[in-house]
Length: 197
Image 1 (tube, rainbow, N blue to C red):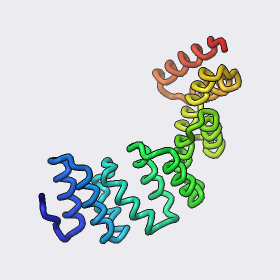
Image 2 (image 1 turned 90 degrees about the horizontal axis):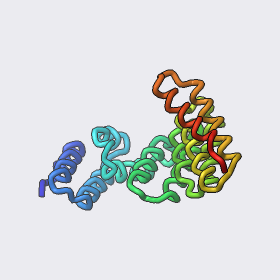
Image 3 (image 1 turned 60 degrees about the vertical axis):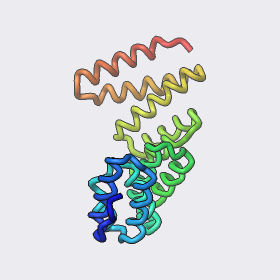
């Protein structure tokens, strides 16, 4: 085992290097948690930035940051996203996303995670509709709304959901700049208009 340097940045780099060699996620989590307990939040964010693609680093770092900064919406979003990516559970992700929305209603990432975390298909579609109402120019949210409406229309034979999907895809088509994007949307719209529910 590599001994831990006293500098938190060096200690974190050593922990990640050992993890990459030995693939011991438990040891990495223990070491990152130990570093997080003794490092101030701003410094912790700075030294963990190179590892933002590693949920094994992000989770213990941002758990500490969120505990120290309970109204930091962006930190909550980063933590909720890492939880989502590792399958931590819709309830935990949804609760963090809701807290982030309360802290900063303009944080679109929080709204996206809030919608994603809803397990009920109809309620999830309605959450995406809320996101698109809150952020009308958010094309990703509108695409998610359309996708969720298609799923609901197919699963429940719901003509209103199908109509919502078609209208939403048509609005995206109207804004599409790339020919391949427009073609893909046209194909989707044509196929959906042919559905018989």
